[in-house]
Image (cartoon, rainbow, N blue to C red; front, side, top):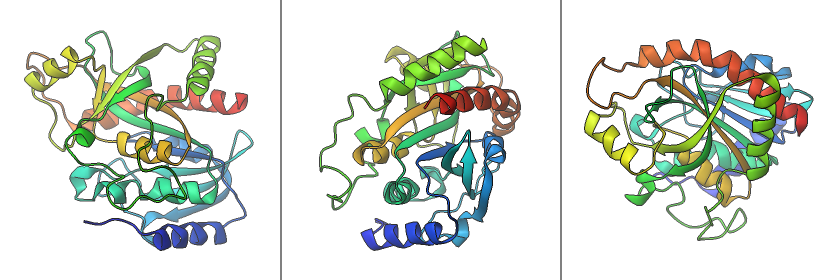
Length: 277
């Protein structure tokens, strides 16, 4: 199993720190079709993911596979423009590697975004959903990014996940949305392995256990972030309606198209939160 070593984490962090004077305190992970926010990061550099030692490279359309360091709303940030997923063949610990590197660089806050399918039938494409909690089905099945030797310098062997999403950051996001007139849903996100989309039976099961939105990312990154004490704000952009009874097929093109609507709303919300931090 591919488990990044402490030396790999340090090497990647040193490579990034040597490439720029920016010392990021906030990290942005930008999901499918949501990478445009990285264009608002100024005064820094872009690096292809493939140039960073050990950094996994995305193979999915809508994930640019770049890392940008610079300033956003006056904060030094690192923006991961595109991520990798379990279905691409990466191990869970390797998927969490970028977050480990960001922690090594001194990041204190992670803003994780994704494109997600609606499970809650009230949700509409284009909606934003604050992730209040998540259901870690992959972790329950034994696929954890924390598998392997514990890195004690980052966090404990058995980290608490009772407040995975920071309550203070959630409240800031609510205030920003209210002041900007942005409709903001809140709910539970579930990460499935993918890459196939869900069957109607899958979706009915997920709805029955309290899930509001479904995707194929984010939970591994949040698990690593919380293990290392990083505060997390999670936001899903709803890309398609629940297909609870079997209807119009879901496609990745639909997800990317929805990102064009979600993008400006997501930017307004995240930039508003950063202005209040």
